[in-house]
Length: 366
Image (cartoon, rainbow, N blue to C red; front, side, top):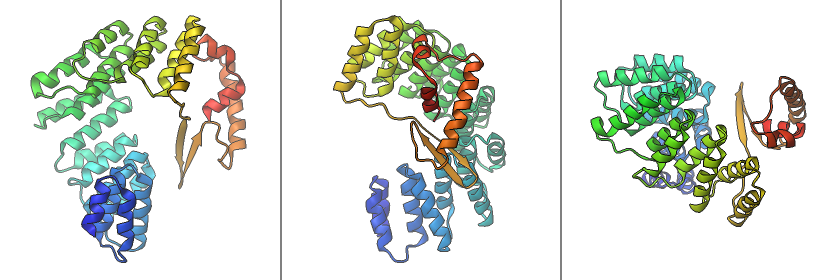
């Protein structure tokens, strides 16, 4: 039965795995670990957290794999406070910072933005694997410490750890955010020349993003058209966004039409292309794009955000009225939107500025 639960969980059928788990009246620690790990592997991190809480209530002693899995769930949920509590439990149960606990802890702190704690765990680990290095480099790159990320990459090589494709995604991302185009190109070439790593779509995407952020839009277009891999629509979507930011509407229209030709199902592409045609005054093309969006059944997903406060997580969806304090929140947002306008803020393009009222600003924030 334990093997069956593990099989179903690893094959993505967590409902069947849970049936097998619940069938056993007294599941052992291995079974608990398999079920928790299965939830995490399939992105059901809340279920993993709930099952771990039940495991503790029933007095089941976790092992290292259990703790590593639940720390990964905390990482995915950016649940720093829960992660700290799990860290305390690892100490209480006598687990050290060896792999996999050390890797999971450094990853959790890095992904939650607590870089100082992540660095302390990382430096104290007796042995660091590629996962640990990647987690710290990624955390530094994503939290605005690009130079430190590149320095850590050099330290990794000095210690004899060979980078993998994930490492280069993180490094190229750091170069992109810092505007280091020349250095990013050098790292891109280093992948295959020095380490024999074949660039993937993620690496090409980082280069296009890097060129787009630097305003080198024509160079980005040439790079996409010279790409030797099947990148689908990913690269054109990045270029479209960059064109909107730099108001290069003609090239943006070109990138957007490429996405339409490829049959994009992402609402953001249609919305961006529509706004570009509005800015160009091409209202017939605006209607054509919106008609195509309807025909293809593309729907715009509502924006969602959440924040962790004390022992609760507050989730907000655009135009959502479910939060118990929504009236107070919306009133504060009205005040905030007025202050923003008084400070001279205007939406990115003139069309939005003319059509966006206070209610829509509040809806956008909530």
